Length: 430
Image 1: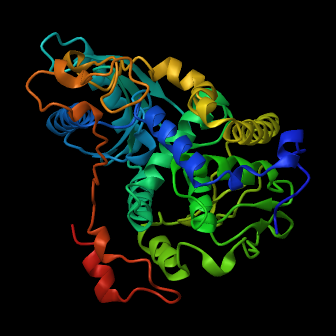
Image 2 (image 1 turned 180 degrees about the vertical axis):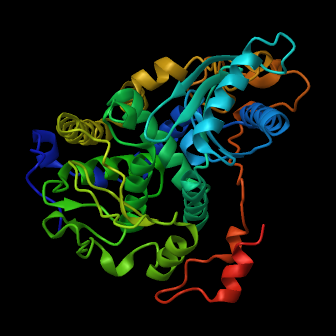
């Protein structure tokens, strides 16, 4: 239920064959080429070190001058060198503290002896007030007393551990975010498009329902585009429990999703995450129906698609349909042309990141390519220019866990009912 079979018309090549039936060898070649594309902007050890040093600097700055504690609340959502880093300052008064943070950073930007270069400080007076700035070429957003992002981080990190497969969930998010942001221009809540967390939830839905059919980031992207371009968004919304009937709102009535007998995440696991990680709701909260409706896995009344405007909704659905048709066509091309066609499918992304120049790396570690990457501009070890380090750390994806509690004690085996109190207390130990 919830899927229209006639939304995307079939091209002649689609009527003749199914990209899902191209065979293991062709899929393997396509996934290998795709990994080379991902390597252009995935996290590296050097990038992690620079990021950690910048965050540590901001934490010390706010602690020493404003006596507030600063938490880094983004992980999976920041896997590209050009995307922002989110922090939340925990203090007494939100409105006053956000102004004090902006003033402090402006002063630091004028300090010639500061540890890092701080510039472009802006106070954003949105629904959630925050300070936006650039620290050593990294874009940083600092909100105040916002723990929702922290809860989301914990949830998505745990899901990645459930899925395993060498962080397939994170690698898929990297790829899909890149395509949505650079190729189809469908990502960005601040301009009426899909929010980051909303997109991540859609990706998680694909894993939840179709985990038996996907084995690499490219197959996740194709299933994502294929499924959501044909989804009946006019009558249904998306939740991990299944499609919700919009006609029944504000009651959230869920229908059985596809492959409902073999879903990835168990009901008990999802309920436990919702109990332990959800931000307390306000009295009177209801799910607000919009043009694109996505239920927050941690809060049934939070619509993660609320940022999407009517015009952009049609644009998003059209972009997904085009992407599904185009990628399907690429997967059917001769094997010798497959890698080149995939490069074309991610042309804007590679124009931004293909040179190897990354704002999230120290200047002395900028490299023109990545060793082991078939799209590298050089066949040799490009990281040899990074002095004082081992031969190839720039090329190594580094998925830091950033644990807030021991995720390994929270397992995806509870079919129904809750995790007992003893296990819950163990999970939440710092």
